[in-house]
Picture 1: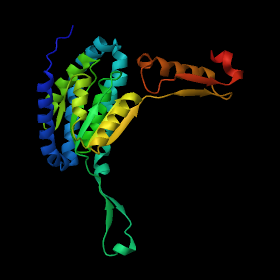
Picture 2: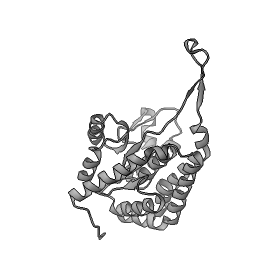
Picture 3: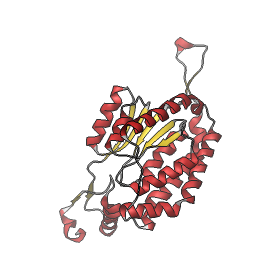
Picture 4: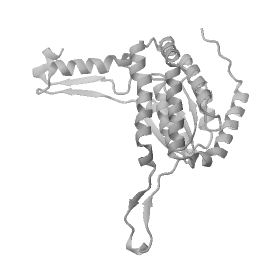
Length: 273
């Protein structure tokens, strides 16, 4: 069994508030970092993920019995690929975008300037505990935010290696991670974050959105839903069946886009089955 030392509720709340205050005070320094500085942070994160690849694989096996090849495909490569893509495009994303100036403002120039949100909370789910924690982090770092992460309490081994990686790569006044259950999430949601990123169920998504509204925080909700698959009479049935089976069995079907029901043209029913 995994031995963990948890902070008592009142001590944890005090620690959460301490880190939040540090990040709030540091948000403008982080917001003014250059593309090169942000890219260097992301490259350091990528190197650290690869450094602890074997520990990540072991954590995913212990938490979810996830096979090594699937851990690489759906967790590790998802992160390294996202970092490569972000580093390749970040400079162009950060550039001001020129737009036309209204005639009433003749003599001036106009442009769209993309700015960081500030202090961001990321609440991650259990089904892809590594990639769905670090992928939103990659975006938040690229955009110049400070971040607090809250991984799922249902994947303790993955949370432990995530905390190890975060502590090695980032200073706590820029990125910090808190382990814990519903109480920890509730304490975090009570704080006035500038943006909240949540991946999970619609039921919990409503709770997150309600808490965000109290502080007028913007939200990104990535929620589960229905994923119908349609196979019409023109489909390549062998290809469709293989793809549907792959999508259903990937991660034991625990993925938001796993097919949950199929509409098949009656002329293709038997061959599809």
